[in-house]
Amino acid sequence: MILISQCSRFLTRTLFHKCTPSAFSLAKTHFLSGSLSQVRAMATDAAASSSFNKVQIQRDNVTFDAYVIGKDDAPGIVVLQEWWGVDFEVKNHAQKICQFHSGYKALIPDLYRGKVGLEVAEAQHLMDGLDWQGAVKDIEASVNWLKANGSKKVGVTGYCMGGALAIASSVLVPGVDAVVAFYGVPSPELADPAKAKAPVQAHFGELDSFVGFSDPKTGKALEEKLKASGVPHEVYIYPGIGHAFMNCSPEGAERRKKMGMHDEDAAAVELAWNRFNSWMGRFLSN
Image 1 (cartoon, one colour):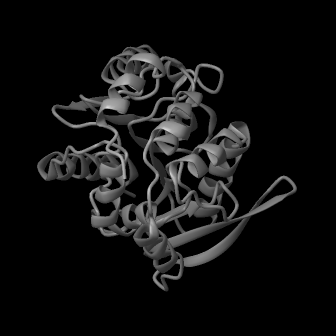
Image 2 (cartoon, rainbow, N blue to C red):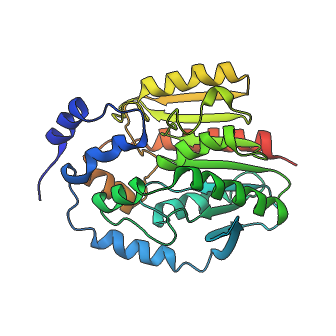
Image 3 (spheres, rainbow, N blue to C red):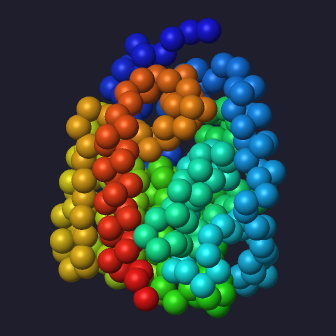
């Protein structure tokens, strides 16, 4: 097993420079993949969890699976995956979200159609192959499904890749009532946040090195774009922590460490969740 902190610093200087999701190509061969047997086991357990109901959603001529948890008649929140896919961590987030406020119905659309990246190179390959415009259509269909099934108002949240898509939904998806994005900004080709139509709250780590995608400079540029849009917005940058800092389950924390991310800050995570709860409560209360 090889430690990758020195490699990570090198990649920061040489590869973290693009303004599109392809910036994540740094991970394909340079990050430690190692043995993820424990993560595989957790992913399998999460996929089999009986607390989620599996539903099928149709848009155009496409049908895709989604996973729902929470109160039937509650406001809805679409929860968007990281580049790994619908794995244990995004389900952890959805489970937590459905318990906030007076209760939410959380829905995770499966943007990868059943595929999950168990190692960095696999996740990279899956994200490289994602039809981003199609993913936005999946989000719109998910919002519409929630509104047709008891949710008067619907928000969208996401993490990393899902964070970028959440912001894109504020621009491109009618019917979105609020957005909370974690460490991800869409490429200009996908969506311009200056044209956002729904309120946006966004969270970034001060030590995030994904330049052009989720580093602090990109977060501050997003804030300027949101000011231009005129929508209610909040942008927070958390000191001393890096990318994917919300992934603090034991298996998620271990995976971050294997990728060279050794920072942990439980207080920052709790603060981010409190801000999430306040924002969604403000805009999704019936």
